[in-house]
Length: 457
Image: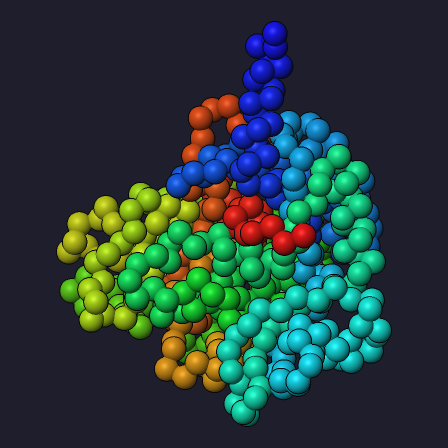
């Protein structure tokens, strides 16, 4: 007869083996591992996060070696159950580019993508593992627009071996762009949402991923090699300090740019009696209110952005263009508890103190926002008449509300800072290592999406 402890262990193993796999995200700032349970409202079972040592942040090779070495201990320490695991291919190790492929008899589309990518990289196609995301028909007859994704076969094998060294069975590997979009399928279910254009900005320490989805389908992806570390390096050079001190300076800034001559003065308050620009509400209102109280963005993120109820906002009628809805997992930056006549506070950067003398991120941010605008123009060229309906910020650097606010203002669109972990159910028995729920956690979009994507190995 089975003992009670052994019975419980077998039951737990059975449930996890039939549920979602363990998700592993090899990120720049941290190694993240997540396990959730199945259901309409997924349950958080275990989560673990291992920050990257400061000395390894700028060295991709040593960083990945460190994460692979530490992975078995992290999984064992956090108490993950089950044997199936899925991981993402690190963005810095992934080729990602839009390609126009001409149909050729006798050759599959994926083989055409593989040959095209190998030619552009100047390597043998057998050295690559390729994937693709279909976008649609291209301009010329017989051509198809795809997002070509490729990684070194040696790197893929190394990650698979790392998973096996943890006594896990690798069952999937996905690009980060697909995982980010999958994470938010649950908020794109309304009638007409297939026409909603969402710009996902995954702002990390090493880079920014621009992902555009039509409904739940990713149709654009690009990696911009500008992230939080680039901004820190800019401040370090301007203020003549090291990177650690520069990061402290940046995260404490409420206004990232010095005022421009002749452009001072307050921005009018947008009230509910007057329509907001581009049909959306004022951007990051709650974040600005928190900043006005001098709340440090990383320490008080949970107070800056409130997670709303799981009900999806259906106020936009069928004749109106699809707009962003309220849903669990989105920290919507709008204070809906204020009286109707008080209105929403406008995004006025001028009301906050400028950076210290000699420190200004305007040029760096202009480079980033110009790159994002080019991505949006490319999407509009592929899908004429489809305009961006909302921005969703994810990634670890999205905890810096002043950064998100600046980008949202520049792009003039309704914006949300996501907290993917907020949607997961908890019963108090989940195993947590290095995860702090008192803070908003936009950096967990990739692990959550990895759990939900189909296994493909």
